[in-house]
Image (cartoon, rainbow, N blue to C red; front, side):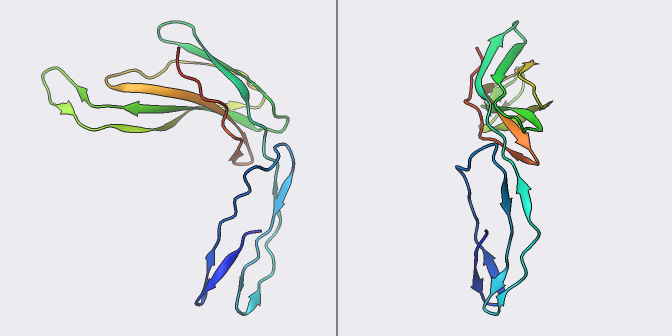
Length: 155
């Protein structure tokens, strides 16, 4: 249950973290608002079944431009899988023009895949100053996602 503390006439929402819950086991939630005047009626119950994480993510170079990913599907309840890349981009200089300054990094969704998928071929992004640190897979279910798989770099 989410909990909060009273702050004047408005409640301050406290966050509830239920990390560490067993995957593939249904979990249900209700929210109850309260203040110094008492509790409001409970919300409707919302239930979800967190999917199990993929394991043994591997990447194989197929050609200079293409790689193949494979993993173990450990979930019997997933709606699908997502492949993500963690990347960085440094300053880039182009002949005859000024250099782009700075450094940025982030994560980008590569693709969404249907339930039961255990492989995917991909053409990594290349370009001036761009480096891909690693890829990982998550199982998705009801708008949520599993723990990420172990991250793998490009070969």
